[in-house]
Length: 242
Image 1 (cartoon, rainbow, N blue to C red):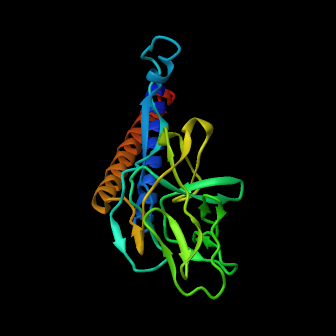
Image 2: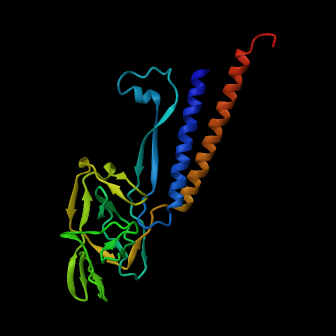
């Protein structure tokens, strides 16, 4: 019976985390370049089976991984000169993060007060030769399909495009930013970009809402099971005659 308590409690924890992930996806369904997240989970027997044969006497589940769905979103025309969309589904922009390079598919950029092209968080877009700076007074900024940036016809730099040998190794450091450990295998590649477009989030609202409802039902079922087992334990441990 105590094993049942543990199993129900672990199911409660898994369901709660699934709800949090689905809610996070819904909260960012309007964030350009956002990639929806998901969870994988497994039984304790399976975890123990990596080191020894499963015994069947330890019940319950645990979250094994958080993953990101890197399928591309749709393109949205904005006409804004600093809105960029990557044409290749497996490529990323590189930006100068506070502790090293970060990677994103969020091309909703802007011009900073010192003329750099930056993200909404203020991180500078990385060019092949460093940050791309637009001189004061420039009236026409053009970003060609190959990433070459010109201001009033003068060359200003070229956008750096990154790709990964294993994008599953990327670690989220925000809704649309990722850090890359060495095992991700980052490399600079030739890419294509569309000026005046944004890539939308790849969250399907109906699927995310359905997932949130299903997770809530799992949570309620685990809660009921936990309550029922707890009440049974109390009855079985109550002194006779009481």
